[in-house]
Image (cartoon, rainbow, N blue to C red; front, side):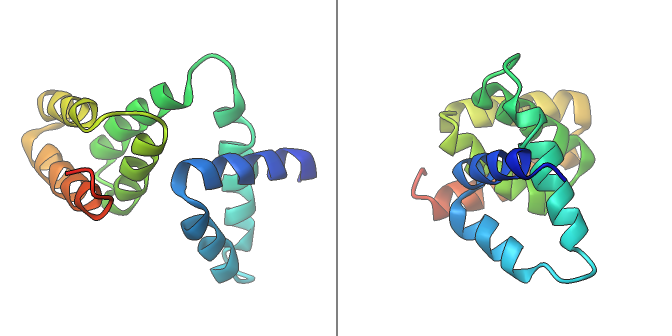
Length: 126
């Protein structure tokens, strides 16, 4: 593991998903899932999220669509929060989810809207 890449990833992960969530995930890691936390932090957040080709806002937009397509509600909730933290508006989030209705299916979009609405409401955005 690259300590520098891990630290950069940890900082980016905290900024996008929220320090409270990330710190809790790291504290809750045990011998079984600690390697996964390290992989996610270094590889995903310390490598791919550090690339210059897309803005964090663009990455959030793409993630919302992909996570909806994969039907991963827990991850969608995290990335809705991240999308707001990365400067997406509620209207833009809605439009991404509308786009997923056409290409991922209505049931996936309905679930995504439900999760997004709950998070946006918790955040005081709607």
